Image (cartoon, rainbow, N blue to C red; front, side, top):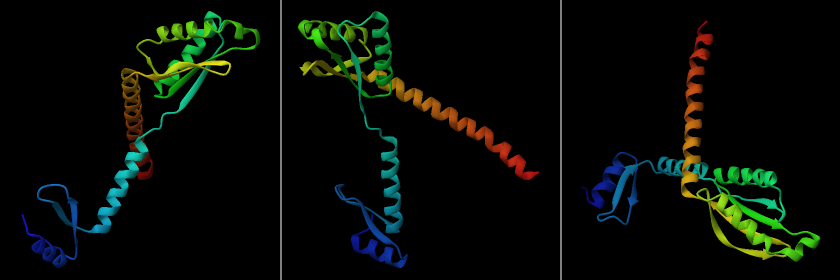
Length: 176
């Protein structure tokens, strides 16, 4: 452990900079490095972190209160797909014309959808009427998100493996 003055002298002798890495630590941590290189590496870390993050989008799937069984299954398949991608899903039950007389079917259908998606989705915001729509927002459960991340990691590993297998072929062609 060097004193501040000794560290500065050593840094100047090596034509490098004394950079404080962790000022909150007791005692503060500093390194003798090239400051521009340090900045460059920090920017790369930030870019890499931003590249790996994904913003969740709000996707909407619409239903009508008197929907057929098959149509409901098709809509639920879309909801599951969006949830598997880690997106929020806005489930809208749209009332048209005379259907507005029977708005009690909206909450019933939404409860049925929630039961069918149990374990895959949880409600983020309470259900409510918005004009001629009965709306609820669903978010994926943590287990669904973890499965999606594992599948993404597997596919990425497989792609890298395939790339590595292709590289020797290219090298052999250039040798000939």
